[in-house]
Image (cartoon, rainbow, N blue to C red; front, side, top):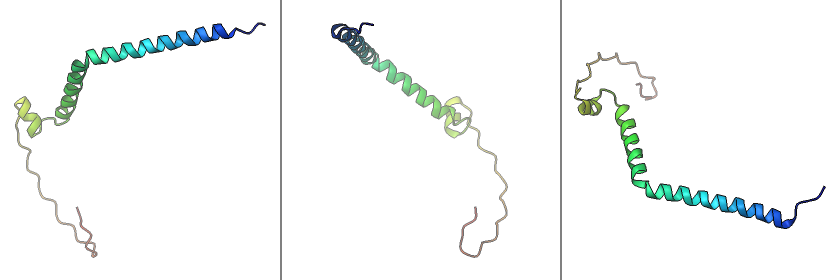
Length: 89
């Protein structure tokens, strides 16, 4: 079995390096040319995740027109203290 020559190995490494460099330049160019659209998409997704998590609350409801106040809840009876000044919730 004959081993490949050094020249053929160097050629393969050179081709792989060239393809990798072209890929890096291509992705970098795409991101640079579309950076404004990418930033806008990320901002929209962030705002949607924040507003979507609020549901019908005060801020989320103000945006959708549903500004209902939460119903009052009955107060729970106070629990006795533990004796060591430990607060109870």
